[in-house]
Length: 149
Image (cartoon, rainbow, N blue to C red; front, top):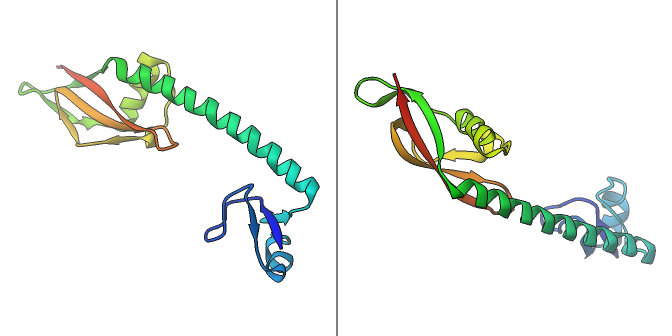
């Protein structure tokens, strides 16, 4: 029996995919749990339209990610941190501070959970951090840390 999945399911398929399953599995589990719908001609047309809409939306999202990436990698972010006389930072630079700097300097609000530090930033100077914007788009951005006493 053919069904159209309404959500991702491990070992079976992804959302909007048409899959073949045993009739009992479809009638007793997938359809009652609203994990799938029967693959009638009418439902197939609806699923096809949804897939096209998702494809367009995904293409627009990839364009936006490329634009954000180009803006963020163009110039380094400038961050100021309290330092001692030896140039060491009191504490360390956090992902929250980096997210605020991105919003203030570049105009993009990025969740701090998408920022990962390559190493702890405890000294003044040039550093790099990884930024993950989803859709397998992971890249480095440069930070320029300056001290203030």
